[in-house]
Amino acid sequence: MPLQNKTKRVLFIFPREQGSQVSNDAVFPFPLLGLTQLASAFPDHYELTLVDESVRPVTGCEDVDLVCITSMTSTARRGYELGDLYRKRGVPVVIGGVHATILPDEAGGHASSIVIGEAEKIIPELLCDFEAGRLKPRYYAGDYTSLTEIKPPRVDLLNWRHRLFIASLQTSRGCPNTCDFCSVPQIFGRTLRLKSLETIKLELQAARKSRAKYMFVVDDNFTANRARARELMAVFKFYGFPWMGFSTLATAEDPAFLQELRDSGCISLFIGFESLLQPDSFVKNKKYADRAAVSRAVKTIHDAGIGIQGSFIFGFDHDRVSVFHEVVQFIQDNEIEVVNMNLLTPFPGTGLYDRFEAEDRLLHHEWPKYDMNHVVFQPKGMSAEELLQGYLWAVKYLASPTIILKRLSWRRPNYTYFLTANFALHRAHTKMANRLWDKDVQHHLELQGGCRFAC
Image (cartoon, rainbow, N blue to C red; front, side, top):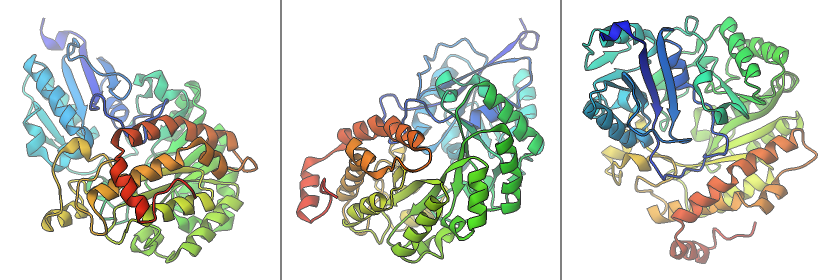
């Protein structure tokens, strides 16, 4: 039967190395947006299936007509394995995403077609070629996608575990900041593109129907455009979602805006502290040159009734082995509700990668280890082994139930949510730390006066 006379079956895959463990694994995985947004661009006569291998692996035997695989650097190898597997069966494979956009020649060896850039605009052309049996080796997105024209993501394709606890929402793309360890500006541009309020309302209606309890706004800096933020906050308040989003310490400078955030249902802000030793090294934290200033900003946000999910990165050139204890102490002293720990990782396409490559500091190109939980470069202030072990110590220490309960104040708003969030990640944090733990390096760090389980 000719392909155009039957329903087209498409399998979307978020690949995951089998048996791998990362620090942000949770009982209820974070809802995927990239593939669900891409799926919304497909015509209704396509039969779509989406598999996140963090929840369950694909078998390779699925009866489908087209496979679409997204690629992050840490999942690229698994994506290539799957691409080779389906192509061997004669199934066309399209690979896109950040890694394929940055390294199309590498990805092209494992796919029928590579999509470079944001894919929504070129889906009509790609599907026309697919149905005619003449897929091109590469499709270039060219201009960025207009978010005023895209449809709501197909969250209905997600496994129930993605939808039960938290819904994700993207209201814009692009970031004006220039952090050299981040590829967002290169992939999505430095100009903020806005999604229409009408589309956002449709997405919130769908989230309410799926009975998600909380909402996370994934925009790189939700509070950067205050006028736009206020428009959205009015919508969030109408739909009654307790919500979280990315922001910066600068939010603490506007008490009135903090109160507006709280009144709209904001329960937590995700703030990239990145480095406590040199916070003013980062565009978003320029005004906070010392730890005391950072602590004052944290207190102001807390006093407004808003919690903090803090992101910290280990491995900067100015870091020494004392950094692990200092960061853990700061988190405990300032009662940071949810902690996101990462190792500095030079992803392809970033200025950091180019610099480390020029300095011959990259240890390897084993992409599965570019997951922010392994050391893939030679640090300056300590050995690679010390950096990894210090990170694991910090992760494991902060995941201790005793330390979690000590850090969280039951007097704060949304205590139950923060308690649940911490314990949802506890098992993943502990398993990962135990798997990579090196007791000899740990002993060496303790002899230097750091990384002891007492704070």
